[in-house]
Length: 192
Ligand SMILES: Nc1nc2c(c(=O)[nH]1)N(C=O)[C@@H](CNc1ccc(C(=O)N[C@@H](CCC(=O)O)C(=O)O)cc1)CN2
Ligand SMILES: Nc1ncnc2c1ncn2[C@@H]1O[C@H](COP(=O)(O)OP(=O)(O)OP(=O)(O)O)[C@@H](O)[C@H]1O
Image (cartoon, rainbow, N blue to C red; front, side, top):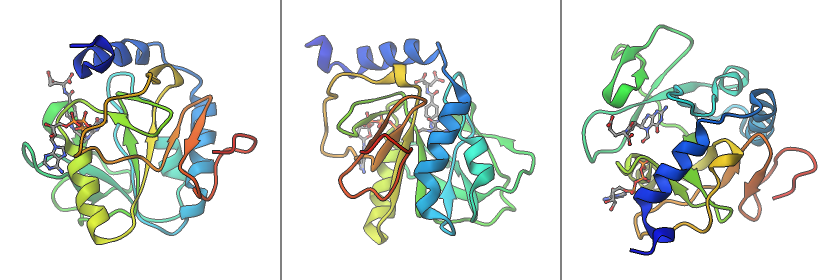
């Protein structure tokens, strides 16, 4: 297969780049700016693992309910439970999530963890299809905003797009901001 189109090779390349990390303060500032238009809306964040860009400062600053994803099985959409700083319980694939007593929330804005991304707002994940299935379900019910978060070094050349891939509305890094036409806001001086 053409190496530029081999998702496995692209994943390995993006994961190696992720390990280099970046400027966390700049990343958080850019993410806060991208989230500003959605004050009051339910926000899904994620609990970072293994060098993933950390969305927690922007989650803490969000004016509105915040939730975290829960993996409930293979090939099923994620569900989301409210999180207000409580201790988490271990979940599938090394994730951590709120315990089952926390209420389910249907987020309207999601911070989506990325393995890789391209400037056309396509994303590459671990390959489980979790966010694709989840965004498809959420978007079938109402407009839902997906903001990818990654280090700038995780950017890849044009990714192969499959019919089940759900596009992002924006991608935030410590350096760059990419957004679809009409996306309402973003870091100053970096129009989408
Ligand atoms: N922080 C975080 N939380 C998340 C995700 C994520 O990417 N990051 N997810 C995004 O979907 C969902 C969980 N799905 C995941 C699926 C696979 C792997 C993973 O590490 N896969 C390994 C293969 C399995 C293994 O060997 O452990 C890998 O690809 O290296 C992690 C999370 C929901 N929560
Ligand atoms: N809505 C869907 N319905 C059925 N199958 C799906 C759906 N979305 C994705 N898939 C399947 O899931 C598998 C993994 O998809 P893909 O390689 O795009 O995952 P990914 O986006 O890298 O991972 P993730 O979404 O977990 O971060 C593919 O075989 C894809 O066909």
